[in-house]
Image 1: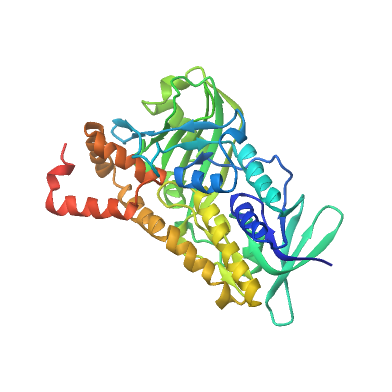
Image 2: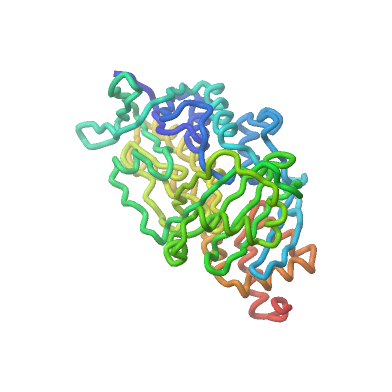
Amino acid sequence: MQTADVVIAGAGPAGSAAAHALAKAGAEVVMLERAHFPRDKSCGDGVTAHAVDILHDMGVTFESLGPKAIRTFGGRIGAPSGETFVAKPPSYNGAPAECWVVPRLVLDEAIAGAAQSAGAKLVQGAVVSDVVRDASGRCAGLRYDDGSGVQTLAAKVVIGADGAHSSVARSLRVRSAPKRHIGFALRAYYDGVAGLDDLLEIYYYDKRILPGYGWVFPTGGSTANVGVGIYAGELDRSSRKLRDILDEFIATEPNVKDRFRDAKPVGRAIGWPLPVSTLNRQSVFDGAMLCGDAAALVDPLTGEGIWTALVSGRTAAHAALAGLRRNDTSRHALAAHERECRAIVGGYLSSGRLLKNLAKSSTLLDLIVHRAHTNAYYASRAIGYGLGTIDRRRALRSIVLKAVFNPSFFRK
């Protein structure tokens, strides 16, 4: 039987961030990845400013990602009315806030490579089936099939970072997410798109799918990642398929349709579920932890999951290291993972829930976008709320105070 201090299911951002921190601290860690790199992952491909910080700390730089990576320095937001505003977020850590657009085909391999450079072992083509338990019921490893048969890897700590359809979570009997806590997104790549620049474009274009939206993220001079995201409830009520919604976005959104007149799809559109943080999923067990999408940490407002995956991977690693030092990997000892993760992302995600509910109102979105269109200060701050450069809790307090004491702020 193979052994390690920690075994991680999944070598995406969450698993690789955990493996990097563990290996850097001297732990023996193995990542089990079901695919072979380079492998694709359905995503908007946007890496926000606070995620860029963590990647830099892991040694993943923009320059190391090659020509398929694009730097962006702001955004264009559209309201259901068709009005838009363009702005750059306030400076971040003393420098212009930059976000990246990097195909996950490139990004995930780079992050996994950083973990390997720190000393983590990567096993590719390893399909995890379930958790191994010891006589007391504590998680003590993983079973997986690497194509040559079922293998067992014993470990003192198990980390499940294997995505929305996590085998580890299922083996731990974590309940499936109800529909109200699930979103869906569909992504396609297009070539021949006109008018692209260094902006992330988001359009709340259709009242019927709010707080869902469509996006256009540049991946090159005339290529873009184009998609739509919608909550399960709105998708059911729309009686349309995601593919129809995406086609309609490209064909009818005033700020998009003319730019796609000569554009052609590259490959097929791919959809994926978004387990949002409103679920409050249990992520700590005796001998095991969940992080990233397996822990349902997707931002309810934007659908972003890379930053929370990186953060939760690191906090899982910190808890594992502390447990290994004390020879205590009980649920109580590993609960430090949830506490630290909540301290870092909790306010951001809870504020995102409230902002998401506000974004269900087309009237309010029209008013906010109009206000940002006419005021550069508010435009910059509005962009910062979505790109991780401004504290969202302050945003909510500001909105509430203006609504109570200065309601004329929201009038056209």
